[in-house]
Image (cartoon, rainbow, N blue to C red; front, side, top):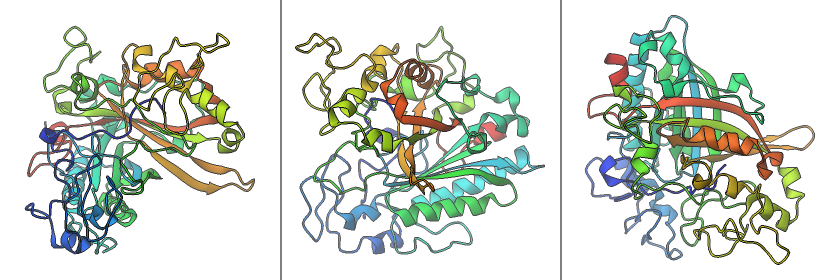
Length: 442
């Protein structure tokens, strides 16, 4: 969890989402299912920063739930969907290991099947074969499906020579208490949607498509605030009640591309400040995803006073503003002191430690989900954050920030890192192609 904004506007040129025209019922490719799922809506959704007009009144700036189903993200494009796409209300993360005997040929066939299924479901159409009809009445609901390759995938497919150096295993961190059975994996799939049934429908289709080629290694379910749940677009809150993610890099920033996307031309440290090693050509337009299951010790956290909680984070709980003053997006004054001479933002406050300017410019695009997996026999909640972040180089993005958190983050006493994974997420598929084709057929 870092001090970065959770909602990033899409770059229309990348076709990673429909934020420029979500829910356009006149766009070719919107299915009859999408139309049926949005019957009665008389206006177009303008995205997280806009409003929509439906057949019933909605609070200013909110998205009427009657139009949520019509929103559609695009599967084909320079980048995969689900990266700069706006936060989803429901998400599933799932990792697979290739079956014994399955290699490069079987992996290519699997990614081809998965890509075909993802394209159809994201367009609001039934799955390629054996559709379960779980989401029959719904539109696309901003569904995205994102694919990645783990470190072990390359040995299993005989492609070690094409494995990116940036995919080397993450270092050990002192705060880790990792369950190996719920970490890593040959293949990783992220599914997000603004309807729970649409998201589950995609999860089930992807799992069925795996057939005998791969088996599920682990799977996790997450959620966020639903579109239209607030009177205006707002940064989401996590299960600690804190506004979570106020400083995410935005596509409009001049260094966004260098920080998040692998460049089209292989670069080295001498050529680019954003790359420490050369990336293979098949990763052009791609990124690297770090996935962490972070359990929140909510009973301990909720036992703190409001003032103590805010001191741990370094921001006000009510509106996310820094303790040094202003609003949520006001720059934090790290040197400001109070009447007693103490720093207003404590030296070990989470928001101070995770700032890019306190970590050599390290930046990552965070796109997490909250999770709740029930209560133990002792009544303790198994709940927290499915942390997902994207960056062009994890050694320059995630690793330096996590190392610094390890050394003295006040929040560390209230969280526990229980699972971890690192995945190479290649660029988007071309029309008629599939994700990872450059790797598997190159």
